[in-house]
Image (cartoon, rainbow, N blue to C red; front, side, top):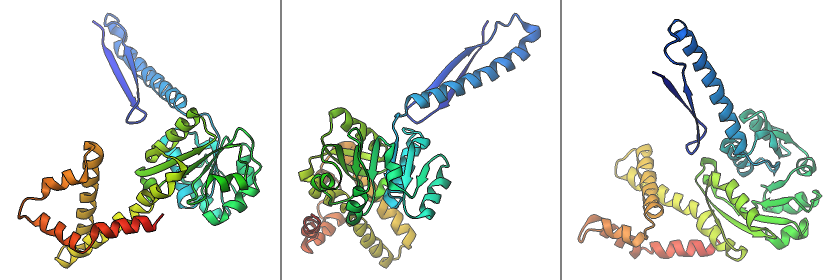
Length: 317
């Protein structure tokens, strides 16, 4: 009779390394316990070896520079490290604030940091520009781009035409617009490309898929889509805030009201995303004739709720 041990080491929620070790036959009774201990230890070592090897095989062999260590730049750096798609030692972040760089180093000591943008960009395959729109020109003009480098701009409102003027119009460029939920891996990220191949588009989508949902759109639609996603998250939060205030007025504790409303919004979003449904269909399911919900919806419409949302979106373009 032979005995087997199954060792499973979890890499992510999608991948695992399975190693099946078969112990020696039981006829070696005098050495059975010793053999089992040795084989078990051997199995653990082999399992860890293949786990590390699997992790290495799933990483992208590219060096990434992130210019800017503000909220967005830091969130991208930390997200890439957590995704295990990029080795931390292949990431370099530049920023004038040493304090922000030290915060990143405390998150992962293998991340490279510098105060010199040119130094960060020099040996990188991908340069992610995560700075405020009004300093894009200053930052780009100090970097000497190589033809094979890819520029990814997270600066809202800066077009490919402007990026090309400040850098080199012949390089591959991407405009990326995430929203603040990127820090939780729940962003709706917009991607537009310039001079990019389909393989490069897939690679950039693969990078930012780690932060939520990505969608490739044309640059012409970027402003409108930004109103829906990057600005839109603030409008959803404004609804949550107003609903919380109503809850407090009706005697519910603020923290309880926040949890109730936020979870309701999360549930509503999941109904659309998971069921591929339409809001009107889901609304009809909870609006019983003569019921409380339809009365509330009618009050919203009497006060111009839908019109206010549409006007806010259009004002954000």
